[in-house]
Image (cartoon, rainbow, N blue to C red; front, side, top):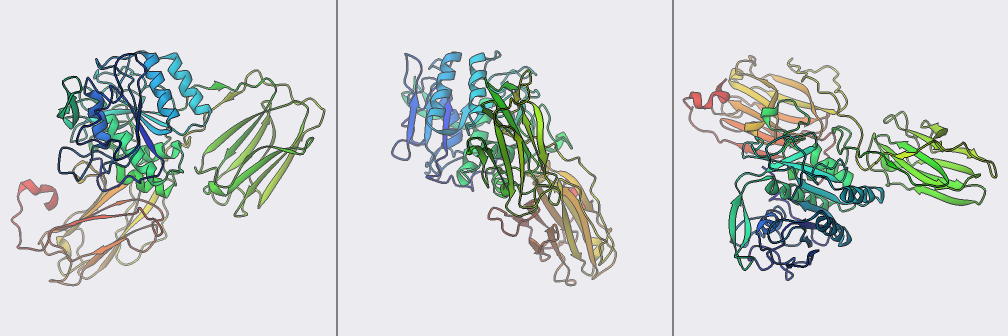
Length: 598
């Protein structure tokens, strides 16, 4: 379901994970030790040691993340090659309990150790002001850390903390069973971001107060959370320069919504859907999140602490954010005050906000540049900029070529009176809203297709199908799906829809951008499209590019799984999965295979 086993963690990428729990069973034969990779730890309490897990819960969580693969024993973790550095924060004691101060100290130790991903399979019904303050500080400092936490096991809509802190740095993880159904115990509320397997999860454990090692199966959102944390670290290791906002958006946008939730983009039970490592890695490489729903929640506005004057620079990027740079210069002293360089902005159609505290009575030059020479509006998106001086707009624009320069203020002249309060809206995660869902548009006329374009947030899927001598035996289905059984059908043609032999049909459909899809084609006589009874064939492509798959010589069926990226020609991570049933005798169809025969 998570599809992480075929992806290796990139050693020496610098992406470290931290587990805050009851400790770590160092010495368990199925877990990494210092002989494999760097492992450090911290215990804020007077009793116990971080490398001894007297309760077993932390070792179970760690095993889901990092249990060693290909060693002939036990279980396999999400990152299984024993090369990811770990830090252990013993936020809970050997009795499974902990204090807010102890958990906070463990969080601080994780960040100080350089961890990029922190898993917290623990929770309290009460929020901690100190923890909230620390999260706000991390965000305001621009700390690239993702905190993944269990949604809670009360089976109701109550909140559990830290999972339910309204922070762009925190993801709340629900638990699902093997069918993608929310587990009955999993808490559901508007803070749930994503889901992962949490029912009957086998992993490593300690026994006898940490002296012995073994395995057991557990249930809980505690078991779901490390799946997501492991995937986050796994994909981040491939692109360590990506921001926490990009990693989080890749996880959420590529998650697979179980079929039973219909067209939901996000709901309180499973968030954006079930985490999928292959989809998330491909999307992180692609880096275009413009078709994604609004990702991380926005924290409550945090006052910008400045006793002098405030310059606020608001940049809304176009479709090519890495081409934009800007420079703010104090003309009075001829010194540069602030800047954003090429590549600093990575998210398209996204508003970035920068606050700068400056002395009063100064004159400033703001210069914005575009590397491609087409500004930030309006050829490739509707980008713009707006400069506010103590809350009053003093310069704005977006339509220019290579650069645009604006002068404001005056040396020795008081600037506009400060606004009563300037608040900093966090800019860690994308704020663009999810594109609306449109019904699939299909054209079924032979040979030619009229000019076709898809709405924003969707890509054009095209099927070119040449029938054999028995066209009525061919059918196909396209699903938005990670797994066929739980996918949502968005288009298809039934047996009998095609009635002209040796004829080429072109079907064009708008599908959701950056989502996993499965195309399946069936032949009722179990002899495919080629080559026993004519030279039929088919090919599938996206956005008018060269086909990414062609076929026809199969038996009962062939299916292709792919991610709907608008441009896959130069992508390293664009992969497809093909399954086909070979030719054989004509099958006597039964009701057990009703979908294949209808």
